[in-house]
Amino acid sequence: MRTQVIIVVGAVGLIASAPASAADITGVWATGSEGGRVEIYRCGAALCGKVIDAARLRANPDLRDVRNSDTRLRQRRIKNLVVLNGFKGGPNEWKGGPVYDPETGDGASRGYLKLLAGGKLELKGCVAFICRTKIWTKVG
Image 1 (cartoon, helix red, strand yellow):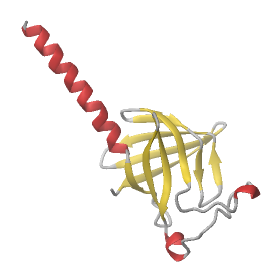
Image 2 (tube, rainbow, N blue to C red; image 1 turned 180 degrees about the vertical axis):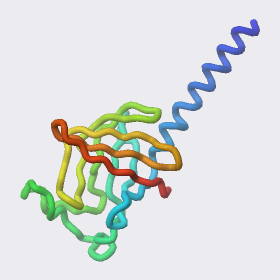
Image 3 (tube, rainbow, N blue to C red; image 1 turned 180 degrees about the horizontal axis):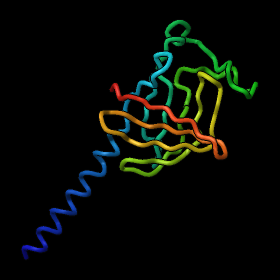
């Protein structure tokens, strides 16, 4: 009987810790450049992220995606633009994509998110074998 109780308590501990870790990634993250803020949120069974603030947006709330290499997409508004899409995994690492950086107009078909200590998030976007990494800080 004592063994069964330990197993049940252990299983409850595992179940309780998984959602808490996954919830740690949702919220608002400072991108570390141009005063950028991205909100990571649940989109179905995955995680997505959208631009909610940046210095250029405060100066011009109607700012468009003029740096996009695809001329057809240059009229999109930066505010609420989805920049992370379809990330799955957890509790501390997720894979997905595409990833888009409106500062540079660069995108990547695949990306990786990894929770780090101290409220940090490592974001890596890769095209072929070339990857670019940024560290974001949780602010909300």
